[in-house]
Length: 195
Image (tube, rainbow, N blue to C red; front, side):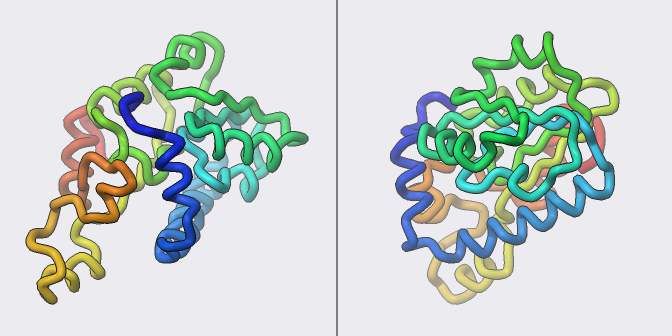
């Protein structure tokens, strides 16, 4: 993941040119909050908080940690959450695995709209699994490479093939595409479970 230009990504991400992303952030957050409220976890790790950490909305926890490599997003999280007893690291997950494994007992890990961006999703998921316990719930969501708007773009001739990286995805330094079947199989290959 460290080969990415995180600061350029941060600037591109907050650029208002991609207003559809704001809509997607809203719905991803809504789904993460539904899942949090369903399981009511107390010790939570958020990997990559972006411009708006889930902890700006979810308060029912005992211990929360955020790992965020972007200076821009890290500094915003610090400002937003300064009085919320949340530990925030300005780093990549792989650099904090040993610390997290030794000192924390997570019952919930959030990996929201991130897996498709990392250089090596296999290695990244293995790092996530290293900080899990037997009962840890991992919430993973990614853009659907067979979403309605991409199916429409394909049928309209705007893109040549489903499952390829779009120009926007390339601009955001994304590396992988997932549809529901591909994500399900990816997770099963690593942990033998479902989604």
